[in-house]
Length: 200
Image 1 (cartoon, rainbow, N blue to C red):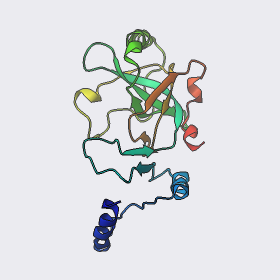
Image 2 (image 1 turned 90 degrees about the vertical axis):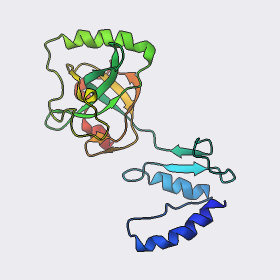
Image 3 (image 1 turned 180 degrees about the vertical axis):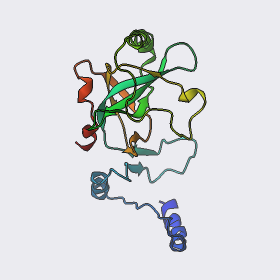
């Protein structure tokens, strides 16, 4: 209640800097719901804050980011080992394009720790097969501000495993953040994991 009017007064000087804009704010639930209906593209959610609490840089107790729930089925085209121990650290996700190429679109690393030993055995069994492997279109390992020497190393897999993951934003052929693991989909054929799902 105190900070927002001060911020609005300060932001009046933004007119001299065309690339700076103050995000809108409202105390109307109906208005916030209208914003939420328009999320997607450059706007991935609405932030709700408790107006009576002071700012605290150490916690997010007074705010929540509300985003649309999106899930998608992906082929596991490869994986990376964890930095400690010989278990799977992350699964590399792919979607088939119209030309039938499997393109790397991101990763998921939040498979429950209790499932990782069994998953590692299954993945290492798949890895030894002679089936077509890895990404046949865009592959992992491109430029990234987060990449380290180790993080560019990955192991290809045959197109056999399908997982359902959640994601918040897709742009430039990639999930913007790590996707959230939901479940394995043995009921789904890898060929069904196309980028057409992104437009549904």
